[in-house]
Image 1 (cartoon, rainbow, N blue to C red):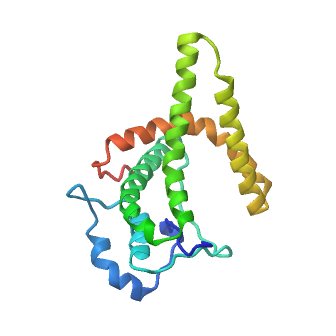
Image 2 (image 1 turned 60 degrees about the vertical axis):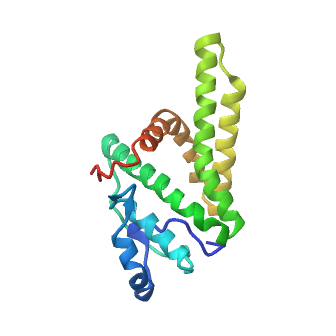
Length: 196
């Protein structure tokens, strides 16, 4: 928000000027990927269309919104698969846009996509060391734990809310559930099923 370019204005939490939306409506309603219609990830897609058209996107910290979230593992994983596909697809669209925006955004988008890749490679290397050599890759485990705590601490500090430290529990979920799901999403980008 500091750079006027939030990369994804979440669907149930976003508001747009009618005049801005009218300019982009045709592009928004005819979203295609690899020649096939694509109707999910519309919030990220619309956000990137807005940025491409020269509009600013902002975060409003005192806004209040409600949404429905998955309450069990199956729907959660289907949601995450849909989101992963949409993130990969629209990252390709955003790459052409990034040079026009702030350098921090380029770093942020690259980090969002390289971070999971590096985490996956680290996890696979640690697993291979354990299977082949029978030893635990302590440096890998400590590095992942340290990076997790730094990231959660920064979030807790910026939000002034210690509950963000609890997000460190998301790392095992990320490694064992979401990284394999993201790999599957990358291999099945052309699938446009909504899944829920």
